[in-house]
Length: 216
Ligand code: SF4
Image 1 (cartoon, rainbow, N blue to C red):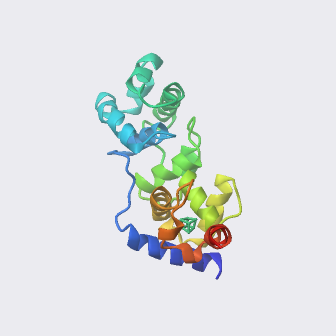
Image 2: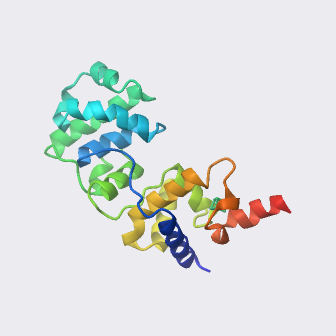
């Protein structure tokens, strides 16, 4: 079975298992999702939603964020880890959005990755979820699941994105991100994956080469 066919079978199964997947981050416009995504690095969605519940009422526009002092913004997001760096990224992004993009979050990958601290992963999350475009974001779960299924041999997120998008139809890219994240969080955990319960084990190289061998 080639990777195109394998990816199709895997996604068909995961879509049935998780029929209503979507980002767990709360947002009502692209700027809010961009900020929530910056805050979510190595932080739980639950904590980020708690912080942004207040933050999004206090600041509405890119200009609002770029006008606030670093100390005040750090205080606003102080319960999230790496808050100093995250405050710097948020202010830097918003300054550029206000000054160079007319206050609007750019709706292209090329535009988004020019923003300070925004890489392809964050850009693709914003494109796929706030702009409704087809975009596959490679986070730690997507990377792990893709590697265990042998849909990629790479360790580099950009190469993994390229490997996945070359075998998955464009209209499924955004959902693939959600499905692999859900599968990674619930079953294909980093330590002790629940291979015994996994519905896609029949397509998994790790299952064949590591899990089954450990049982024999
Ligand atoms: S069989 Fe195990 S390693 Fe493979 S996808 Fe399922 S949980 Fe992950």
